[in-house]
Image (cartoon, rainbow, N blue to C red; front, side, top):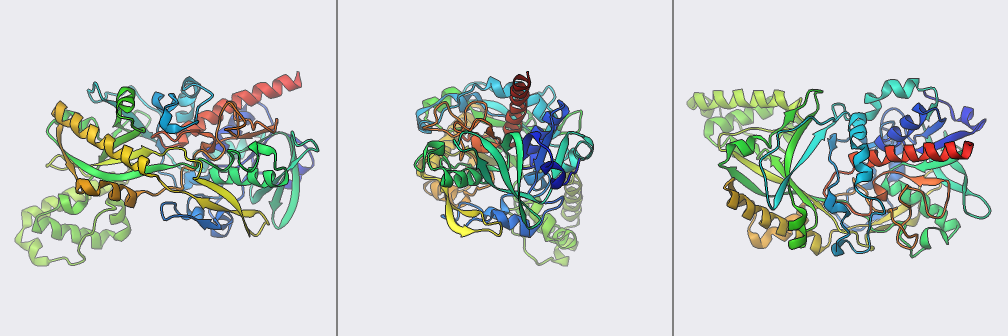
Length: 535
């Protein structure tokens, strides 16, 4: 239920969760359903405020390959799910194999720890999976699957629970700006909360930071500034190993195996959730060719490639004028269609124009329901989108700057870039896929760029800052990690961190589904901890 901060200050809750994005909501709801009292603190309100979002702006960003910091978060109930496409992807076994390319990054838990919670996480996100007829694959590439949330905005999807769960106390406009530690620096006593222009302190038995990767690190760095020995000291792992993913397109496929192709199209399950198959290199291939994990799926080609004839092109221009530029960008973000619509082309090519209009109208209607616009074409030609792993590198990091926001909390200085091996590994994976497609006679693999320009093309497309992985990473040792296998800070016995910032590797997966699965696992752990303490 929506609560006032004043009511919470008068008592003490079992667990205080900072952040009401998908991870914070999943954790808070799971704990409250078990009978525990939960304070859920949200910096924003029910809707997105540009002013509140600017609290997360960075003092500086080192490269153009990181998006503007305030654009990569949403300080509002539901968090980044308000801008999220709803894509849900599981980790792969290869993400847990501790290969040398990932340096000293090691999961202290097995993939099975996530598998036990994937179904519950999908149910929470509204992205359940049916029994799927997957493409017939063997050898070097295997099928992977992704699904999408029916309602991506988790505040809307779980609005009734947020309003009615009596033990869940959601407080908006409550920005946590610091941790108040005990004299020994071993426990968190209270959180310092900036609320409606005033500073308050809120106590709880257990605290969980679930306010996004950079913001989790920012609060811990502020605590470390007061107690420098925390989290391995100033040269320790906190705020380092910042990761995201490479994304874009380098190639396309002209299919000859129609059955294989159609199994990679969008499909819908019985609950209404969309899903589709993708291509991923096997563990054996990743080890053999020293590949970071990557995944590939079909994307509709730019519309001007589909509508190449004069009549069809004229219809496309007319459709753009009617529907508006925003819809056209959504339908094909690569498309650069001329603004000139020739009536003579429409009249001179009536059959082409009519067929193009029919296909565009049908595709536009479908695109309102599908996660992404996707035009099937008679050429069986589709672009190959990729999502590639980034290696954990200590120099990719965030630090506290001297610049402060309006609450007095220091802003972050962000150092982030993709290194040459990130790019080279992705290109090697494309070459391996090209060989596999040819050997399997699935179709023809065609590069979109000259081969000697592939590295430049990948770097030009490289942009992240949204997934915020690794900054408070999980591990067995406090010398090389910030939290343990249960997401508890090594140095603070009642402080936990939830979200993608605890992942020691990025893998190929979008982080939301695994982060929610780990949050549900954390909920079970905290229930056990609090029951044991109560007993």
